Length: 594
Image 1 (cartoon, rainbow, N blue to C red):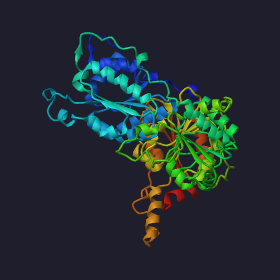
Image 2 (cartoon, rainbow, N blue to C red):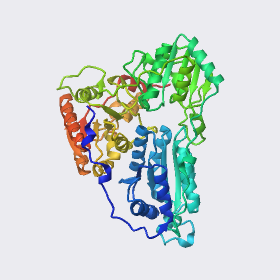
Image 3 (cartoon, rainbow, N blue to C red):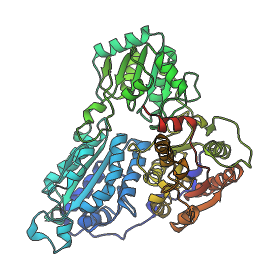
C-alpha cells in the first residue's frame, strides 16, 4: 500500500536546457531569481510573447529548475493545476498568463481559487505601456491600461510595477498577501519593456525572511474564554467543520475537542475532509445540502461551533435554527467586497473568533483542558457499504462501490467528486483523503486540479484519484497532455452520463411548475448522438485510456489495472458509463423551492 510513486520518474528529468553562459543581466532575470528566493517550485504557463523575457530567464538563467516550468495547453488549465497543488500543500504555485487575452482565459479558474481561499501567485505581462515602444497591431491588441481590472474583484491584491525595483517589491508583497489567511490569489503584471531592460549587474536581492507572512492572528483571551464557557456549559454542541487545514495535528485536536464535548459533527462535501466520517460523532453524510439527519441534529443544538463553514447563514436557515448560541470562527469577512455574492448571506452570531479555525480549536482545547489527540493513520480507501454484484449497471452508488472494491488496499486522496456523488458512499479518515470541490461551482477545472493535486502528492505515497463528470472532462481534456508530458501519475474516472444532467433536473422542475412535458428535459442537455469516445480522447493526449465500462465488475477491473499503470508513473483515464441520476438528497437540494 502507498508506494506507487517510488517508480515514477522525477519531473526534473523532463525539459533539461543546455547550459547558458550568463554574459548579461536583464530585468526578467531579477524577477526569475525572486521566484526562486521565495520558494516557488513550479510555474504553470501557456507561452506568450508578452513574457518572452521572463520565459527566457526561467530557462537560461535558472536552468528551468526551482522553479520548473509546467507547459499547459490552456491558461485555465495552468491556474487549475496551481489550485490543485495548493489544496494539497497549502503552498502557492506560480502561474504566468499572457497579456490580457491569457488573463481572460484564466479568469474563471482564478475565481475558483478565490472562492476556495487557496494561495496562488498569478503573474502576467503586457505589451509596452510606453506607446512609442509598441510594435504595430499585436502590441496594441495585447496592451491594457489597467490589466488587473479584469480580475481585481476576485484577487486579494494586484499591481503593475513600472521598474525592476518596484517589481521586486511587488513579488514580495504578492507572496506575503497570498499566503496570509484567509489565503487567495494575487496578480502582478510585468511590462514587457521592464522585463527586457538590460542591467549593468544583478541588483542585491532582499532577504525574503524579512518579508514573510505575519504569524496567524489569535482572538483575545476574553473571546476564547467566552466561547469555551459556552461550549463547556452546553448540553448539545454541534460542530460545523468547514474550511480547515490539511494538518494531521490539527485534525487530531479537532477530534479530541469533539470527543471531550460529546459534540455532534456535520461536514461539507464542498470542502476538504475535516473530520473522520466513520466516527460516532459524525451524524450525517457530507453533502452539498443538509440531509434530514443533519437538519434534525442542527435544529436541536444549544451551541453551534462553526469552523469557517461555507454559508453559515443559509445552513442555519435550512435547519430553522434560531435559538442556539452560535460561535463563528472565520476570517473570511476580510475578503468580502461588493462585486460578488460568494460571501453568502450574513449570519447572526453570538461570538466571533476572527482567526483561522484550527488556531481557535487549539485555543479552545487548551482552555477546556483537552489533550492533543492521536494523529490519523494513513489508511486504505474505505467505501461505506457492501460491494454490489459485478453485473450491476453503474449509477453513482454502484460506481462508488466498485471503486471501493478496487481501491481497498490503496492509500488514496480523492481529489474531485461529481455533483451527483452520494456522500454516504465513502468514508474519509485523514485530512488528505478528500480535497473538496473547486470553490466556484463551475465546470472545466477538474482535470487541471487533479493534475495539480497529484503533483502536490508526489512523495507522500498517496495515489490521486478523481471522479470527473463528462462535461468537466470535455471542457479541459487537453490538460491531460501536461500530465502525460511530465509523467504525473493519477487515476481519473469519468462518470460519463452523456448529459449535463444537473440542468436536466432543473428543466424538469421548470416544466412541472409550468405544466409542460417533462419528457423534453433532455433536449439541449444530452451529450449523445454521437457518444464521445472519452478513452480515445485521453489516449490522444498521451494518457492511458480505458473503457468504456458500464458495470461494477468492469469498473473494478479497470481501476485495478489503472492503479498498476499509475505505479509505473503514468496517468490513466477511465470512461465509466453511468446511468443519469443523483442521490435523493442531492435532487432535493437542487429542486427545493426555498
